[in-house]
Image 1 (tube, rainbow, N blue to C red):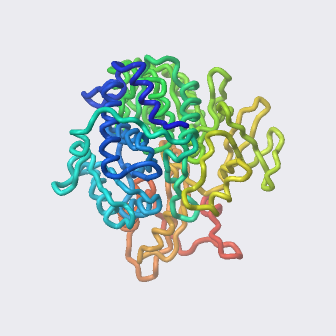
Image 2: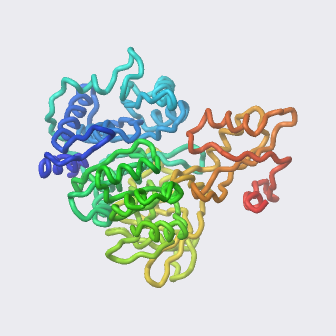
Length: 508
């Protein structure tokens, strides 16, 4: 029996007066945090949310995210986090596919009208019944603050099974439609526990949380692991290199986790004595989401004298599979060694383990492996075999037991730490009346790791420009998914069986 909300309960019991969350000028302690979580749970229960239900949450890194997240878990329901970059059709699909009964959505800002998009998506969904705005969206829309303001500050958590679903996290698939990876309470608890042993040294540290909490990396490695260890979480809704420098000094931050593009930005920000001193205040840095070039690691550690440890994971692994662990040793450029309780093998196409030094598919098993893709038995069987999760990534193991990712079996693009599957973008773009054919590839980018490029064959009568195609796509898909580079070509290279030869496009 296990409910992840115990992370909040235990930290509130042991360290009630210790700061847990800071955003701007606001800081709350563990006691107040737990009381707000209980208020949320009471409000959700009165709305009919309980064991086995699904509740969607679309919210940036603000105080309400962890309050709502744990409030949902306390009722015995599961959380379905949504990216704040989704557009209405994507929101409607995920609400319906996940069977979410309630949708809590950030009201947004004039520059980022996520509340408007969220309401449009909610109105298109077939199953979701309650829409709650985080912030003031419109007079007729109920707000989260009003929902909980008169609720009791005590709530007895529903005791779920450790195998019950705690989170459904959506990950794009090669079919073009996102799949919901079902993660249990034990999946997330063991993964956060392993993360704390790797990253946190004491209960008296602050960590900067700029990784989005709706993404599994930020959710587990930062929020769950941090609260498990009673750390102080400094929330940052949007990454800004200069603001990072300032927050590190202001809150005496010792732990920073980011994706490669963030480290690139920190290195390329003004190299002042004050900024250098700020970063040197850190004890450890963590990188994930995409491969961090060794050149950036070397430059960062040389300038700031702070180690960056890289890891590897995926949503289906809750997410951490391997890490460069300081107590074991590390190798820059590698993804490290398996975390506690996780086994990793390199296998051939028949599933046979390969010897050291040979390339093959990375597979893993352990308490971090997802239960299934929600309501998708066929897709689950394709990746889960005899308890082993087949990652689709090509890797190699060296003689010291360190793993290195060398290629991707899938055509997934990792742009700034966010996964983009070409087929999803291609299928959308093919709906454009100006497009005859399209192929999406990833190209190397110094800042983001990879950038998205579209090779477009226009219809003969089309007068559309590159900017027209880019704008049309941007309006219909998440911000990080649309191609920044458009190249018009007369025809796509095809194989004898009619498949697009993307390798030819990458070398053209």
